[in-house]
Amino acid sequence: MSAGLAFADSGSGAPLVLLHAFPFDRHFWNGVTPLLNENFRVIAPDLLGFGNSGATAQWSIADQGEAVSELLTSLGLQSASIVGLSMGGYVALALAANHPGQVASLILADTKAAPDAPKARAGREEAIALVLSQGVAAFADGMVGKLLGPHAHQDVHRSTRRLMNQPQHTVVTALKALRDRPDRRPDLPSVTAPCLVLGGTFDTISPPAEGREIAAALPNAQFVEIAGAGHLTNLEAPAAFAKIVTEFSRDRATTRT
Ligand code: MLT
Image (cartoon, protein in one colour):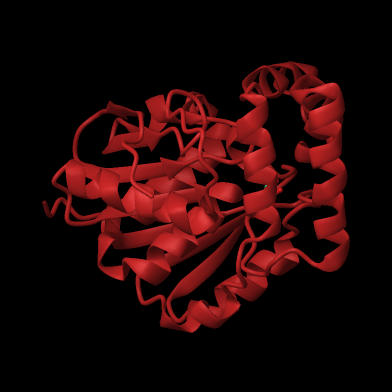
């Protein structure tokens, strides 16, 4: 699938590509971008169908990886440091599997390599039915609390909820793509780029234990926990998130074009 992704581009230096979670868009990164673009050229795309990357066709997580690969090529970048959070991590793993040369380093935040188990697949069906019958707002109202940890401030709940505003078609397509994403665990031993796996203590969607397993399966990885945060570590702990990303990526990023 070929579609030019809309993206934000700020700062200068080695390229750092930020891949957002579901159901968000590039604005997901607004809190950390000013902290990261002091040191990097920060490129934050709207993934296919989200934000300004409108797409009516069906897409898979692999298609999203191809779209990110095409974006890098169109920008004349041979490779970049990739940061993917949750769904963005699934996309980052697809990119690393299919275009390893484009990945200078990889940060997998609050994400999984395993596919949906039968219970999770059933949950996707329920979510699709809810979105179709009651709309995206009802789905987002029910989801936001699950994304954040128990200590997240009410302001973070409100701002996160405001960001969860995507077209109905996109949310349904995404739920199908998330449900059908492949098992990336067999690919992990072949990912040779330096990796950091990052997780929030109270993430119940991608628990830290799962992050530690991913790090253990990668040949060149470390695991870092953001204490006290839930699933959306960048929104709950932006300063800690940006510090970890900066310290890891600074020495590993590349300016090759
Ligand atoms: C996300 O944060 O992107 C989603 O929780 C991913 C998922 O539902 O698998």
